[in-house]
Image (tube, rainbow, N blue to C red):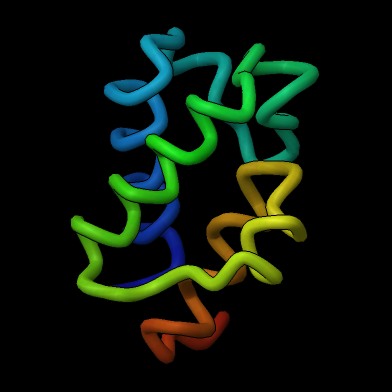
Length: 85
């Protein structure tokens, strides 16, 4: 999986979980400011990522996720996806 493919999958999960428009989900989008996600929705989103990718996101990592790019970065690290892939 490439980083672009990862972003597309993350975007799909965000659209499904948060019921937001696909066009609103950009790399720079803030979960709270741009996508209007509350803390419960962020937990649901984290669980969806964990389920989809078969990983665990620790609480310390969850606290660092502010934007879509943050989520992609953490997932890419856990899945060993390099920028060059």
